[in-house]
Length: 126
Image (tube, rainbow, N blue to C red; front, side, top):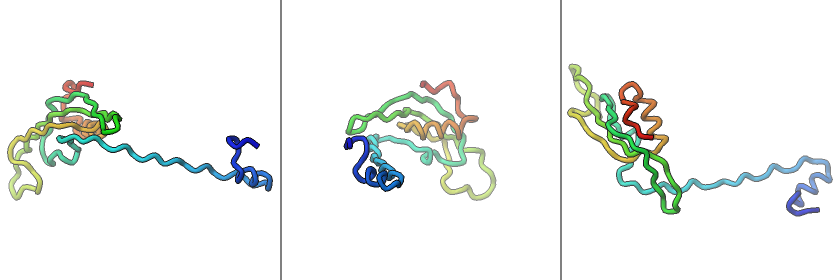
């Protein structure tokens, strides 16, 4: 019996006519995220405003272990929509705001899908 081919437990189960045990899955921990001082997420963009993507440049950032995280350096301008009579909803902005920082690739793709009609695709530098 070769140790690498069949374990002793599975060998005994096969001798009894039982199926082998399922192999245990190796759980790999997620790597630590890089420390980025100006990281943006999709939730950081204020609601109820018109979005304009001014600049998006692909940029990779390394964590402490040296793993690369792909993302984009973005600059987004949020202009408030026309005011309607009544009390404005909470979290709205009163004047144009420029947000800039690094967005992880998944967050950036969700941003592009969400605001596809408002942003210009020509400013994205892949």
